[in-house]
Length: 391
Image (tube, rainbow, N blue to C red):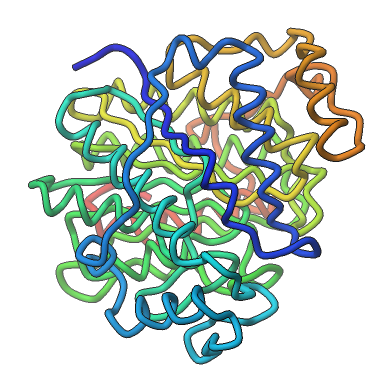
């Protein structure tokens, strides 16, 4: 395999644009790519583009009638059919919606193909991670589920074990639903508790379809207010042991930046520094437990579009390219100028929030009165015995 990382990028992904008042501002993608270039990471990873996902690829996950409805709304937003989740407040229809969505999906599918075929060990599509879209409907700012499509394509190419780890603040419901009854895919989601946040799913008792799928879905429902220590404790109490047991041929991870304490749409209190630690952990786990170290990393949510998202995903690109960015480094002034020109906001000055996160390993013992430990234990008790592991 090539030792260089792969970064999927096409300027046209910024046309995935629900409008000026929508929190999912595509400027976050442009600013991330600008910061990647400011740090010279575009010279240490191969920056490539893939073609948009065609109908046959989209149908690996999505229903034919839904794809037709997206096309109709894309051509004329007045034709948006809300029974398909289109033309809603979360997913307003816009001209070119199908083309932009299919392009993002194509980048994730192309990245999965490259990793599977050994053209790169690691690949990143930070425009992807649109994990809420369902086979027959848009949901939660997501039109086509690129993560599910990438996994489905890996299965089509012959993969027998694919692990999906989702650390977005929202439950990775669309990916879980797509592979609910498929034991070839292990889905793990760490997210804010469903009582507190959209989409209201992701309870620890959701463990996959009875029978062959049982134990293939894993959900850690984190208490609102969880910060660095708890978030990292939960991740390391669940993910490494499951990956060591499953031994995936490919690891797909989703790195929504909306766990951050500045994010306006959720209630966790995670720092950029903890997000970087989880990215590094996913990289290390890929090399330790994944056949050939194959790793596909996606973006996801994240609505602090200047202060958080570009820094978080630039760290991700650097880690995947084996050229991590120094958290203490001063961000190039050229990028801060770009931020001001695009947004009239002042950009952050360093690649850190100034935190040095620490956490207690699960093996050190748990506190039965601690809400975070209760959440972790609920997950372990629900799913670990189904996989022959000790809770």
